Image (cartoon, rainbow, N blue to C red; front, side):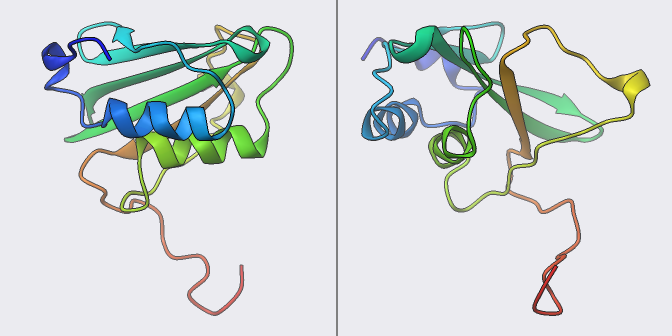
Length: 132
């Protein structure tokens, strides 16, 4: 694994992420620096990639994680692996569907997860009554 000490601002364990991707059979390359506080991992399967970044948004530090494939949309299982590798079980992650006017799409086959770096839950507990 390359030296990633310059990623001190990124609240993501790159070793846990690479392990999760390997366990899922996605054949990750070693992480490389991406932006001011982020990393990128190429995936040998399907010509894919994972990008993780972190930035202050609305008074909190937010993690962003995306997974993309060359020719198809990632699956639910792909997102579950991404969530486990980036956020772990101690933090929530959210897929966001904004209004059309706020929609951004720079890759036709990428899906994204967002979550607070401190693990704070920002949505209500929709299952509090025992069901959704």
